[in-house]
Image (cartoon, rainbow, N blue to C red; front, side, top):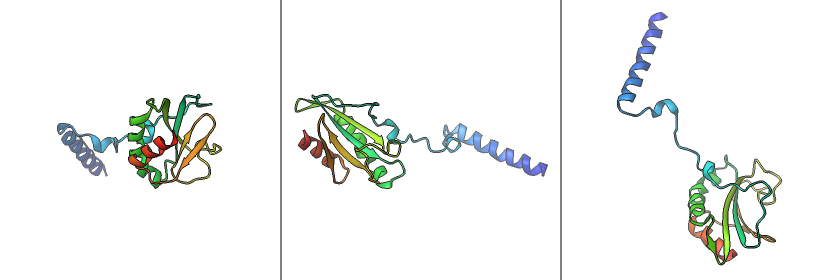
Length: 143
């Protein structure tokens, strides 16, 4: 039993030394990729659009594959439009996990991504494929 433990420790130590010498310790830490939804702009509590603002909001669920498939496009859309001005309106591109906020009208009872453009007095929902071109067209048509 003692020899098995020593052999196991030698193997582990050898693997660590090999990985260390190649500057690759990735196997020890798992997947280093940061989940993209952690970098979305989230609406602050009690968020209200001012009269010169428009918010484009993605309601998503982390576990939903369709949501995950659209995260890349949403991140690019956010980078292109958040805090920019279009048609005299300041654009806020926000996202929220609807499983964390189940009672919001934005998220609704939808299991999957839901995009809405919100103004001070109006909400308009998007029903289409989540890609950069479609999202940009929806935003432009909604302003």
